[in-house]
Amino acid sequence: MAPKFNKEMEFTYGVADQLSSLVRRIVAENPSAYTFHGTNSYLVGEPSGQVALIDPGPDLPSHVAALEDAMAGQELTAIILTHRHIDHTPGAQVFQELTGAPIFAFEEPAGSSFGEDRSFNYDIGIKDKEVIRGNGWTLRGLHTPGHCGDHLCFALEEENICLVGDHVMAWASSIIIPPEGRLADYFSSLDYIDALNFDTLLPGHGPVVSDPATYLPALKAHRESRNDQIIRALQGGRSTKEQLVALVYAATPKALHGAAAHTLEAHLFYLLEQSVISFEGGHYVLL
Image (cartoon, rainbow, N blue to C red):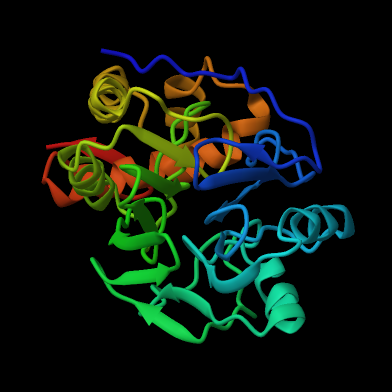
């Protein structure tokens, strides 16, 4: 069962799109092979009153101005990060300086990884299932390692919506970045979110996921099929990381092969942990 990736997304840079009665999305103008159209920043709260800003995104003047316009007349009471990657974090310090709002992030930085913002600082650490509240909204943190070790999703309890950062995206399968990003964790985190039966998922990049009950199992099956592809490639005599990327990701645009190499490495670590393969003299070998 392959996931049906969705690359259709209606939006305008600088404009806040109302996705539900409590959630608005503003897309940063930082498109790339890794970020799709750009980083999705979310405002959670009533049109007037207290709001939370989830994933402020890059420190781009146009994006900062768009978020300021969207928050006019409101009180920013929480700046919340799903994880510490550089396309999500820089705006946090900007808005703390503007408003004095505290910055929330997972309580235990998981160690350095590709794309991490090493200058990032936060005020309040969040554990799994801990809650951040404002007038009219409740956000529950859900620790979801996989993409990276410090990743959090946030359940908006009033609307049965989950803001899923880079754990789940509609336009592509998420990158898993070793060593702190682990495929075993990713599988467990998919199961965790799936079991909570959300109506809607709001990713850190790309369009809304409106059918989580179908989509999440398909994402897991997609990763399991990659494991099978790697095993078949090894049976066929491909044994180095470079050979495996070229074969397993032959249908993936070459601009994404750098990301694919990270995820392939996560699959190889997983197969090593499961004692399916070994690594000998620069080559992966089936056991």
